Image: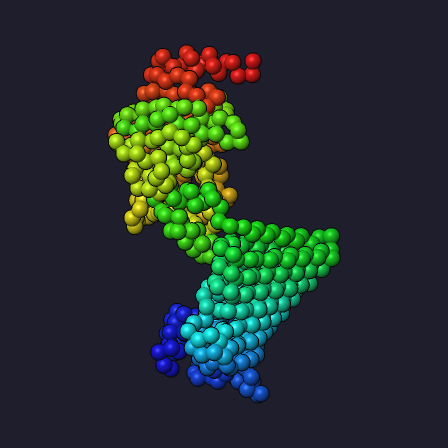
Length: 305
Length: 232
């Protein structure tokens, strides 16, 4: 790995990946490092287009790192990663994609992650997207996450996109069986002419299944964001979708909420708030000695914290 | 010394403040009172720089500060507790106290500031400044942020508004302490007799004009008479 690779990895993982117990590092469409352990096994798919991660049942305290880096301008990298999480296991998966593009061709990463979560298993999935480089070629990321949750399973997803990604289309589909819980937190900040689209589709199929989706975003300069959510409750279930966005400069945000209760016991809530930073928030922080610019930074940092 | 010279403020063709002249001395505790709509909040917002007067001047320690911004006044030693505490997303009580203090502070120091307003649990430091806190808790945190700055000119806009009796009692203690220890100017908007009782000077506003100003003894009779008129 060269210095650019290390910097990208540091931005998305913030740690020394090769010292981790279980990892798979993908660079420009190729695996450049992998390590499994007796409980978590990573194997390549036969067609070479991705990996399968097998977590044995009852595995506790497992952490898997699966970063992707792209430094080749003009590359379109499509990868299919499947996660098979055994019953009663409790695992953390740290993922992310960093793109460095110093040239004029677009660099694209389409990462399709599928989670098969067995009964009573718990998964925390952390995903960070980052772009850098001085070229005119765009850094484009299109992550797709499919989640299939067996009864009494639990998953939390933390997604962060703060810097450098020109275009992102993020799709998340989930099907939840009884007593399963899915908590998603998304934080996005866009600059310049960047575009970020988010599409959540969650089907609450099982009794007492629940989901909580929180999207916090900041659209600055000329950037555009779109948040679309569609939650279907087919039985006694609970869903809370919350979309908050701050606009700066000429930033634009569109929120498209859709909730569909197919059962009288389904309890589905959607909240959306889009607007500029509240004047009284600025005024309060300025009354504590901050300049307007400093106050704005504190408010945005807190909002995306 | 803080001096307001001929301050006028008008909105939607309505005079909110009409030629206000006022001199406030250090080591004094002032209470501004008067009926709703008399211009009290606008007056203190003008002193803090949150609103700009249409005309008139504000002189602080001999310097014209009329055109200084809120944060410039904060740096000169002005502190302001808002009537409606401001809510934030993702900003904790500890974060806000650190910002207010202006320097890195330890949890113990932050907790000491909260103790001054009757909040003793360390758990408060991690709480976000949002609606999960009660109105009384938010109000006391608001006051703690002002105390953290140890300002020279300390302004409280109706500190008793929207709080429960227990919070109000502990709040009265906070003001009693400020009254006995502050070496600067304290200015409180209040309708509460227990806070009026702490005042060295009471300022009575009515319809945007300064109706009367004087010490506690001479003002209380006028205030009681004026308050009896409400609803007549």
